[in-house]
Amino acid sequence: MITYNWNCKTVDAYVEKNNEAEVVYNIHWIVTGTSDEVNSQGNPYSATSSGTQKLDVSDSTNFIPFNQLTNDKLVEWAQATMSEEQIAGIEAGITSQIESLIHPTTITLTAGE
Image (cartoon, rainbow, N blue to C red):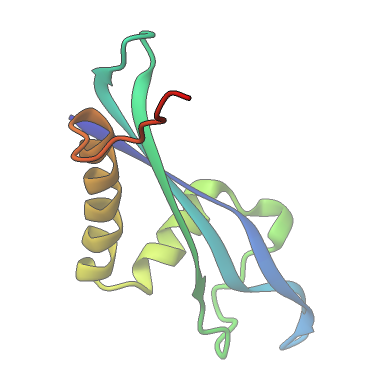
């Protein structure tokens, strides 16, 4: 089983927009998948994917000041603007990376002198 952790703590914000300060318009996301399988050193296999997600800031009706935002709220916003297919694709890519670590199909070798 793979557990996915979304980190959306880094954002781009307008200094001021719609008479509000520090208006978040772009979320930088980092998704880390961690497998319950471990390598020979006892460490879980993991992989990461990252990107950004633009937000629609044309309506400030439900504005939340930046100092009141949490990672959970930013994850909610980022995922709400993504399609289910996009989220599934990100997580599938991480799963594929982890599977390649667990069951490699290629190796790097160095010949002797």
